[in-house]
Amino acid sequence: MKPEIQTFIERLGLFLERLGMSRTAGRLLGLLLVSEEPLSLDDLARRLHVSKASVSTNARFCQQLGLVQRVGVPGDRRDYYEISLNPFEHAIRTRTAAVSEGIRLAQAGVEAVGDDRPKARARLEEMRDLYTYFGALMEKGITGWGARRGAAPGDAERGGGP
Image (cartoon, rainbow, N blue to C red):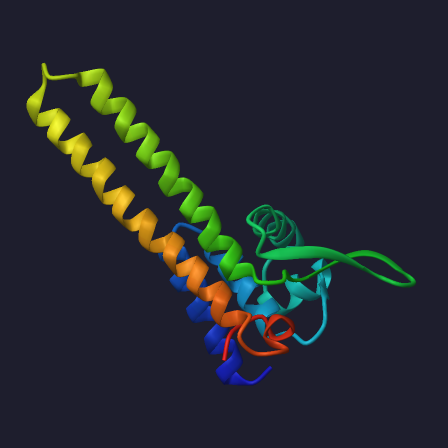
C-alpha cells in the first residue's frame, strides 16, 4: 500500500475518533474507502494490523451506522465488507434524526421546569432553539445535496456530486 494511502487511513481514524468513533472503526472505514473490491475480515485485520475480533466488532458497528455493508463473494463462505452506497449522506441523515430528538428532549425539559426555574428554562430554550436552527440547516443541506447529486448523470454511481 502506498504511504500516502496509509497516511490517509491513519488520519481518517484519528479524525473519526475525535467525532466519537473508535480509531479502528475510522481506519476500517478509510481502508474500505480506498479499496476497489470488498475485503474479508482477514484482509482487513491484516492490512490494519489489528485483531480479527477488533475488525469484526468495528465492522458490525460501521454496518449499524450504514457506512459499510456486508457482502458475499461467490464461492467463498467468508464475510466481506464494502462501503455502502452514499454512506456519508446516511450519516448526516442519522445526525439530523438525533438533532430532532434533541429538540424534543429540550422541549420536554422546558415543560418540566416550567416558570419556576428561569435560569434552567433559559438554558433549555437555548438548547431547543439552537438544535432547531441547525436541524433546519441540515435538512436544507440534505435537500440541496440531493438536488446536486441528481444534477448530472452517473453521480449516484460515483457516490457524490460534481
